[in-house]
Length: 79
Image (cartoon, rainbow, N blue to C red; front, top):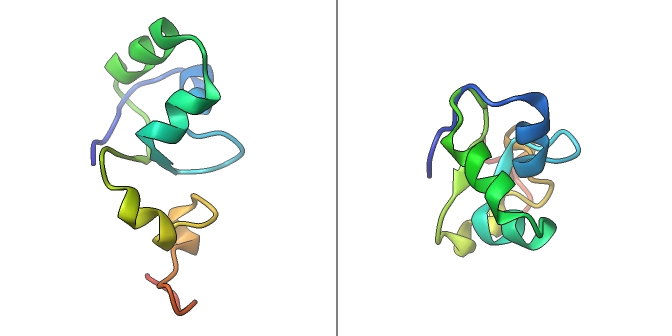
């Protein structure tokens, strides 16, 4: 997991669309065909969100991709 800091609103939206603050790297690359733009966004500093690398097993805990709505597999609140 990596924290990303100081991105523009556009860069943030590339990684965390629709008000999300949780992202998985495979899904980020699936949404965009512009790797150069994504790479620039990853170099930025200032995004408040969590970007997971190679942790696909955690997807079940973040069905809405919003940290405040994280849930255990049984549906109980993770936070």
